Amino acid sequence: MKFSNHLIILSTIFLGFWLDNFLNPLTIKLFVELNFGFLIFTYWVFALPEKLQSSAALFYGLVIDLFFSHALGFNMLFFVATSYVIHLYVFRFRIFSYFQLAVFFSGSSTFYLACKYLLLSPYNYSYILLISSFFINAILWVGIYLIMRAFRRSIFSNL
Amino acid sequence: MARSTPTYTPIRNYAIGILLSAILLFSDIAYGTFTPVRGFVNASALYTQMISSGALENISNTFYSFKKNRNLLNENKELKEQILQIRTKDFIERKNRDEKKKIINFQKELISSLSNNYIDIYKIASMDLRNYFCCSTHRIFLQNTKNASIEKNVPVFAGNSYIGQTKNTYIDFIEVILFSDASHVLPIKSNSFYCDARGKGKPLLISCTLDQTNQDLPNQIGDLIYTSGLGGIFFKDIEIGFISGVNAVSNNEIEVLITLKANPLNETFYAVLSKEADEV
Image 1 (tube, one colour):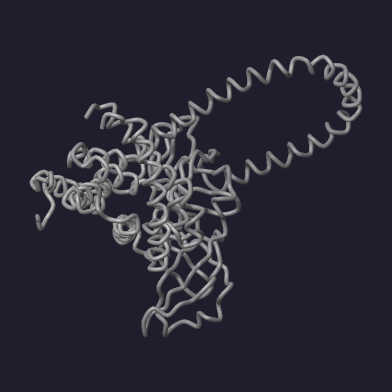
Image 2 (image 1 turned 30 degrees about the vertical axis):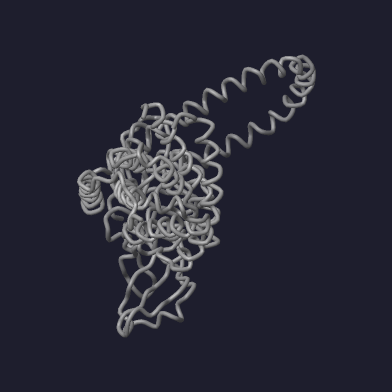
C-alpha cells in the first residue's frame, strides 16, 4: 500500500481521536465515553487486513500516543493486539451479522476503555461507564462501519 | 469444509510489536521516560494551533478593516464632539487618578515587603478538558509570551487562591499541575488537623486520610482548609477550600474530602512567582 494511503487512514483515526477529545468532556457527565478513534482503527484493520499488518498498527499507535495519550505505548499495545485478533478471525467476521460485529467491536473498545482506566486513571474506574459505553459504542460501530465503508469505496477504489 | 478460516497472521511480528509497546508503556508509566517527548509534541501542537489561528485572525482583520474604513469618517465627527465632553470630565478624573496612584504605590510596597518574589501574569493557552472531567491527569498550559525562565514547582495563583504549581516548561508554554491531579500532594491544615492532601483526579476535589479515633470530623464539614506551608512551596495560611465530605475508609481510617476554592475553568489569567518562595 502507498504511503499516501497510510496517511489517509491515519488521518481518519486521528480525526476519530480528536472527536473523542472534543465530545467526551460533554458525554462523560452522562457516564458515556465515546471511542471513535479506536473503532475507526478496528474498521480499517477489518476492511483491509492484508494491507494493514502489525507494523502499521504499531506506527498508528505511536502517532496517536504522541498526540492524545498520557502514556507512550498504550495505544501501540492495544492497536497491535487488536489487529492480531482481527487478523486471526477476519474471515469469520465477514459472515457475521451487523449485530454480532457491533457486539465484538464494541466489546473490544470497552476492554480498551477498562484497561485505559485501570492503567492510567484507576480512581475514575467505573462499571456504569463501561456498561453504558458498551451500548453506545455498539450503536456507534454500525454508523462508523457504514460511513467508513462508503468513504473507503470512494477513496480507495483500487483497494 | 474447513474448520477454521485461513489467516494472514504471522505471530512473530505481532509478538515483537506487543513486547516493544509493553516495554515502552511500562517505562513511561513507571519512570515517566517519555514525558519530555510528549510535552514537546503537545507544546508544538499548541504552537501550530496558535500560529494558524493568528493567521486566520489576520485575514479576517484585513477584511474587517475594509468595512471599517467606511464608518471611520462618520465616527470621526462623533469623536470630535466626544473629545469636547471628555475634556470637561478629565479635570475630575485627574483628581481620582492621584488617589489611585497612592493606593497602587502602597500595594507595591506591601508586596515587596512580603517577599522578594516577582509575580508574572500568564494567560491560559490550553486545558485538557477531557482528562479534567474524566481522569487523573489535571494539567493546564500557560502561554509564556515573555519567555521568562520559570522554575519547576513554583506556586500558581488564580482567582482568589492557589490552584497548583508549575511542572515543566516546553518552548513557550508552562505546564501547570493542578491540586486535583491524582499525582499532586499538598500539605494542608484545618483548625483541628494537618495532613498531606492528594488530588482525587476529579474536578476541584482533593482528599486526605486521617486517623478516625482522634477526630470529630463529620461535624467539621464546611470548615475552611488552609495551606500549611510544610511543603516549602506554598505560603502558609492561604485558604484553598473547605471540607465537603467525610468517608470511612476502614475501621481506623477516615477520608476527608476537600472542595477547592479556585476553579480553573473560571480563570483566564494565572499568576506565577518567578522565584521559588520561602516558607513564611
